[in-house]
Every structure is written in C-alpha cells, then in structure tokens.
Amino acid sequence: MNLLKTMGLFLMITSFNIINAQTTPDKQSKFGLGINVGFNRGLGFQTTLTAIKPIESLPVHFRVGVGYTSLDPGSSADARRIFINNATNGVPQEKAKAFDYRFDFLWETNLFNLNEAYIVFGPRYSSFRANFKYIGGNEDFDVTSRQFGIGLGAETHFKISERLDLVALAGLDYFFNNTLKGHDTSYSPDNDNVNPRNDNQNNNREFEFSDANDAINQPGLMPRIMLGIVYSL
Image 1 (cartoon, one colour):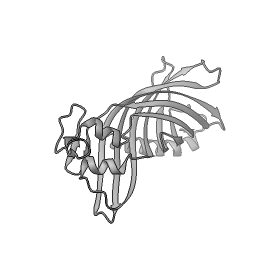
Image 2 (image 1 turned 120 degrees about the horizontal axis):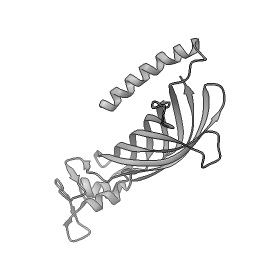
Image 3 (image 1 turned 90 degrees about the vertical axis):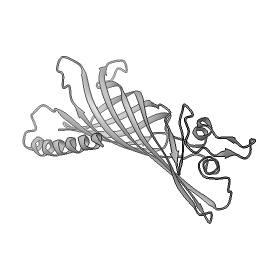
C-alpha cells in the first residue's frame, strides 16, 4: 500500500512536470514517464517513472514501476481437491492476474553497440490472485499469494522525437515461493499448513505445499519481452 501511495505521488509530480516541460523545452529532463506492453508469462502492461541520472557521477537511472499481467491460473480440478473438497461436479471457469511492483537500476552499457542501451536489475514484489468457479457445482473461491523477487534484463531506446523514445526490453524476473491461501486453507513452503485437505487418490495423505504449488501457477520464472514508449519530462 505504501508503494501505491508513492506511485500516486510520483504521478502527481510527473503531471506537474509535463505542464512545465511544455513551457521550458530546453530544460534538461530529470524524469521519464513510460508505458510498456507485451509478454510477461501472459499479456502484460506496465507503467514506469524513471529518475534520470539522479547521481551525476554515476551512469545509472533509478526507476519504479507497476505492472499488470493476465496469467494461466493452473489446474481447476487439482485446485478444488487441494483447497476445497473432492467433488467433481460443475463446469470450471478459471482466471488469474498478478500485479507486480518493481524498483530498477538502469546501468548504461555499450555492449550492444547501440546509442542508448541499459542493463536493468532490481527487486520485485508480486500480488497474485487466481479465481476458480464451478458453474452448477456451487463453488467459487480465490487462491492468493504475495511474493518477493529479483529481476535482470536489458533494454534499448530509439529516439522518436526530442522528448519521446521507443523502448524495447527483454528480461527475466524470479519470484520466491510463498504461502498459497484459498478458502480456509493455506500451504506454506515449510509445510506449516493450515487445514490441509486429504488426497483421496493417494491413501488420504494430507496435501503438502508441493502439491498446491504444482496445481497453482503463482509467479515463479517470469520472462518479459515488451515494447513501449518513454516521455522525458
């Protein structure tokens, strides 16, 4: 929530800068406002705000971003068995989404022989929610998780105009496993589980985190290939 408040403050600052930049076009840009779209283990969108060389002696930019991705939630049949019960009636409908929050360091590089290219790395945080509904089966429940992660990638900028750049980026984020919660049940990586269900297909043993993690596609390895634009403020 604090990060969302910070992003709101950043957006207020950028709005002021857009107005100011239109009256002072020769002023050196201090911020960049970006929008990206592409593949992020699903269709993804991202907004970013970049502080351009806030430390003059270092060839590095700082950037915060918020993203939204539509994801494959996993196995609806297994999710029901692991989090609810062993019923099989009803027609399943499923969907999932994740919001990701990131802080990036953009380090200038000439490895790609391009005019403006960066190595990108930094911490990540993800908020994931999968929904499983069984039409005619009277079941409708969410499975959620919150995860920290790290990311590494590369991007390059192509000048469109004095203040507008086209951006191409590719990278890989990795999110660490965390507790999966659904209905009145949760499964944790250390198997300190709450109300685990019994597996009627395996001698009624209790389900474990590995079973839940196999059934639910919470963020793990998240490859990213995106295109976007950045407006210098």
